[in-house]
Length: 102
Image (cartoon, rainbow, N blue to C red; front, side, top):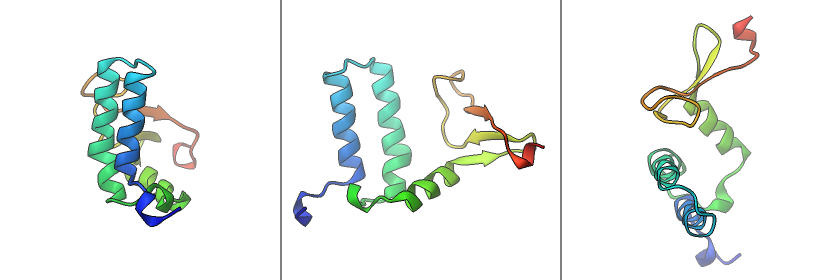
Protein backbone atom coordinates (compact mmCIF):
# COMPACT_ATOMS: atom_id res chain seq x y z
CA UNK A 1 0.00 0.00 0.00
CA UNK A 2 1.45 3.42 -0.85
CA UNK A 3 2.54 5.31 2.26
CA UNK A 4 0.07 8.16 1.62
CA UNK A 5 -2.84 5.70 1.67
CA UNK A 6 -2.09 4.46 5.18
CA UNK A 7 -4.34 5.78 7.93
CA UNK A 8 -3.77 6.14 11.64
CA UNK A 9 -5.49 4.07 14.28
CA UNK A 10 -7.42 7.18 15.34
CA UNK A 11 -8.70 7.88 11.81
CA UNK A 12 -9.64 4.22 11.31
CA UNK A 13 -11.41 4.24 14.68
CA UNK A 14 -13.33 7.39 13.80
CA UNK A 15 -14.42 5.90 10.49
CA UNK A 16 -15.56 2.68 12.15
CA UNK A 17 -17.49 4.54 14.86
CA UNK A 18 -19.13 6.70 12.17
CA UNK A 19 -20.16 3.47 10.41
CA UNK A 20 -21.60 2.05 13.65
CA UNK A 21 -23.54 5.26 14.18
CA UNK A 22 -24.89 5.84 10.67
CA UNK A 23 -25.23 2.34 9.22
CA UNK A 24 -25.68 0.13 12.26
CA UNK A 25 -27.69 2.67 14.27
CA UNK A 26 -25.91 2.29 17.58
CA UNK A 27 -27.35 4.33 20.47
CA UNK A 28 -25.88 7.82 21.07
CA UNK A 29 -24.57 6.77 24.49
CA UNK A 30 -22.74 3.81 22.95
CA UNK A 31 -21.18 6.05 20.30
CA UNK A 32 -20.09 8.51 23.01
CA UNK A 33 -18.49 5.68 25.00
CA UNK A 34 -16.65 4.40 21.90
CA UNK A 35 -15.34 7.88 21.04
CA UNK A 36 -14.19 8.38 24.64
CA UNK A 37 -12.26 5.10 24.58
CA UNK A 38 -10.76 5.92 21.18
CA UNK A 39 -9.65 9.45 22.10
CA UNK A 40 -8.76 8.84 25.72
CA UNK A 41 -7.04 5.47 25.46
CA UNK A 42 -6.40 3.98 22.00
CA UNK A 43 -5.29 7.09 20.08
CA UNK A 44 -2.83 8.28 22.75
CA UNK A 45 -1.42 4.78 23.16
CA UNK A 46 -0.86 4.26 19.43
CA UNK A 47 0.56 7.81 19.13
CA UNK A 48 -0.26 8.45 15.47
CA UNK A 49 0.80 5.01 14.24
CA UNK A 50 -0.82 3.68 11.12
CA UNK A 51 -3.07 0.64 11.31
CA UNK A 52 -0.52 -1.49 9.48
CA UNK A 53 2.07 -0.67 12.18
CA UNK A 54 -0.02 -2.23 14.95
CA UNK A 55 1.13 -5.74 15.75
CA UNK A 56 0.51 -8.38 18.38
CA UNK A 57 3.20 -7.01 20.67
CA UNK A 58 1.57 -3.56 20.70
CA UNK A 59 -1.84 -5.07 21.45
CA UNK A 60 -0.39 -7.14 24.32
CA UNK A 61 1.37 -4.03 25.63
CA UNK A 62 -1.89 -2.05 25.52
CA UNK A 63 -3.77 -4.77 27.39
CA UNK A 64 -1.00 -5.00 30.00
CA UNK A 65 -1.03 -1.24 30.47
CA UNK A 66 -4.79 -1.23 31.05
CA UNK A 67 -5.24 -4.35 33.15
CA UNK A 68 -4.23 -4.71 36.79
CA UNK A 69 -4.56 -7.84 38.95
CA UNK A 70 -5.32 -6.89 42.54
CA UNK A 71 -4.58 -8.77 45.77
CA UNK A 72 -7.87 -10.72 45.44
CA UNK A 73 -6.95 -12.04 42.00
CA UNK A 74 -9.40 -9.71 40.26
CA UNK A 75 -8.48 -8.19 36.93
CA UNK A 76 -9.38 -4.52 36.81
CA UNK A 77 -9.39 -2.40 33.67
CA UNK A 78 -7.64 0.75 34.80
CA UNK A 79 -8.68 4.04 33.27
CA UNK A 80 -12.14 2.93 32.21
CA UNK A 81 -14.90 4.43 34.31
CA UNK A 82 -17.96 3.12 32.48
CA UNK A 83 -18.63 -0.20 30.83
CA UNK A 84 -21.86 -2.09 30.13
CA UNK A 85 -21.00 -4.54 32.92
CA UNK A 86 -20.71 -2.03 35.76
CA UNK A 87 -22.40 1.01 37.19
CA UNK A 88 -21.26 4.44 35.92
CA UNK A 89 -18.19 5.58 37.80
CA UNK A 90 -17.20 2.09 38.93
CA UNK A 91 -14.27 0.18 37.41
CA UNK A 92 -14.83 -2.85 35.22
CA UNK A 93 -14.05 -5.99 37.24
CA UNK A 94 -13.63 -9.50 35.89
CA UNK A 95 -12.75 -12.59 37.93
CA UNK A 96 -10.32 -14.80 36.07
CA UNK A 97 -8.52 -18.05 36.73
CA UNK A 98 -5.08 -16.87 37.65
CA UNK A 99 -2.09 -18.33 39.50
CA UNK A 100 -2.23 -15.18 41.64
CA UNK A 101 -5.79 -16.04 42.72
CA UNK A 102 -4.86 -19.54 43.88
